Structure formats: structure tokens, C-alpha cells
Length: 396
Ligand SMILES: *Cc1c(COP(=O)(O)O)cnc(C)c1O
Image 1 (tube, protein in one colour):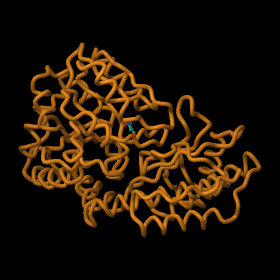
Image 2 (cartoon, helix red, strand yellow):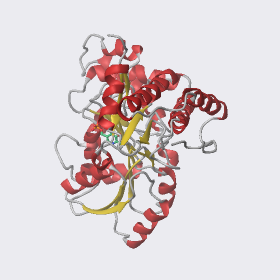
Image 3 (cartoon, rainbow, N blue to C red):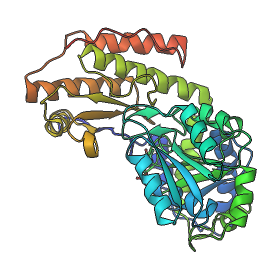
Image 4 (spheres, helix red, strand yellow):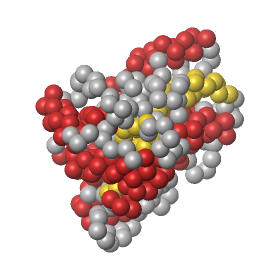
């Protein structure tokens, strides 16, 4: 009872009060006019969020459901695709593609690094029959941001579709679909959108729609052309999670009311805060040059029990952060700062991390790390996104 619980995980993320109140509204019927009116509003706002002229489909599933819908709707069994695999979610693309019977070429990227666009270009050159490239915008397991825009540029003029898992990027860092020539962009509700889990959103480019229409749907539930026809009438193919749509209406207002640029600027500044704070604590960020804007992964000093650090931060300070997955288990801490998270939450995260390290490794940061973090935050707000300050000295 001493602490608030602060959810600093890369999904689910905290819910703003306006969203919670919207979620609590009475049930309405999903085939009646009141719901269609909401769908109409939501549709217009979603197109702004995705940066697309086309429809954005709500799907009742988690983010992985939308990844599945994309693969099963855009590719026929036997099609060849390239998967950019630099973490757990890249691996997930490969597993989903394999389950659809696709022939997968895996472009292995060392964990913690971003894919090099020229490597994607070379893979496409080597196999012109590739029908798609599956990539994450942010690879949440490592905290890396792949250079999607540059990858798209290298794919110009080719038949292969660019399919982007933007689950931890949409509403967090820029990913304007039409501008960047992304063929499929998808996300989930529980990350940048500040909603509970359970809803996914997916949009296709005109040429991806042509592909979807020519592909035999891989399953009954995810039939994107039929779903689109319903969405254009303010409906969904099946019973939709009505409250989540009502909540989405509210969360999109929050994201759009000051412009998306302001959201990105805040996300960028929080990223600078956490990275500078971690460095001042003597911890190296795991993702180098290409780092995500919604979470920061930091390497723990050798021998420090990562699980125990997280447990102390949670039980003693109320800060819930994520650990590493698979081969990174126990080795990194992932501090989520996407969605409804502000500077004070981020400072709480750093402090709880420091206390966790102290309790488990007898290690403690220099006293000014919180001030260093805040200075980086203020400077980043002033300069705006994209300008990386000179590397601070890493003390260890
Ligand atoms: C969270 C996440 C997923 C998984 O989404 P679920 O909603 O758990 O299915 C997939 N890809 C990325 C990049 C994610 O961050």
C-alpha cells in the first residue's frame, strides 16, 4: 500500500483516466447506429495515426493475431518471403510464415543491432522471386529500431510487399505508412495506444489489397477483404470488443489533440532521459545507434541477478519493468516508456533500478544520475527528435 504501481513495461502500458472512463461506459450494440458513428470517427483518426489514405481495420485479437492475419492474407503457401530476424519478434514472423507453409529466407541480424538496408537489397537481388519482406519497426525484445524507411527505399520497384510489425512503434515513433511506402502496417492496443490488450489494427497499401484479393484467405476468421467491406460501412465482420473501440476513440483524441509530432517529441525526450540516466548509472544501453523510442534496454553488470533486481524494484518501489527474453534472460532490463508515461515515471524507473542493483549487487550509481537524466530530457525537448547528443562517458 506504500507505493503506486508504475507499469514501465513495453506493453501493457498504463491507461489514462480519460481512456478508463471511456472503457467503463455502458455496452452498446455493435450493429446499431451509435456504434457505426463511433467507428466512423475512429476510422478518420486511425488514418491520421497510420499516415494512410486507406482503411485501418480493427481486429479482435492481440498483436500476434494481426501478424497472423497479414501473413495468411497476403501470401499463398509456397510463397517465398524474407524475414528480418534480430530478436524474438523477428523469430515470431518466421514461425507464423512457416505455419502458413511459406518458404522463409531468414536475414539474421545480431541481437542489439538493426538490419542494414543494403543487406535486404542484396537478399532481394539474390532471389527476385521473394514476395514479401517481414520486419519489425521496433524489435521490442532488444530495444532496436529497424530503419524501415530505408528498407522501403531499397525495395522500390520490386514486387515484394513490405510488411511491418509496428506494434511497439505506432503512436511512439514516426512510421507514416503511405509516405514511407509500407504495404502492411499493424499494431496492437496495449502499447503506444494506451489501451488494454485485445485489439489489433492493420492497414494495407492499394497493391497489398490487390494481393489480398487474389490470395485465398488462410482462415475463416481473418478475411481482410470482407473485414474491410464491413469497416467501410462502420461495422466489423464479427462481434468486436465494443469497449475497446470506445476506448480507442478516447486514446486517439489524446494522441492527436496536440499533433503526433508532439507525441514523438515526448517519446524521444523520454528515451534520451532513460538512456542518459542509465549511462550515468554506469549501465550500457543494449541497443546502439538504432534505438527504439518506446523502451530502453540496458545491459546489467556481469553476475547481477536480473530477475532479483526486477523483483526488488517491483515489491519495494512499485515499479514494474521487464527483463530479457530467451538468451537475454537475466542479462538486460527493459524499461518501457511508451504511451501514458512521463518524466516522473521514467525517473522512478531509474531510481528503482538503482535500488534493485544496490540490493542485489551492492552496486550503486553516482549520486547525480537523476539530474543527468533530467538534463538530457530538457535538452531533448528543446532540440526535438533525431539529434543524438554526444555519448556521455560510461562509468563502471
Ligand atoms: C508486443 C509485441 C508483439 C506481441 O504482441 P501480442 O499483443 O502480445 O500478441 C509483437 N511484436 C512486437 C514488436 C511487440 O512489441
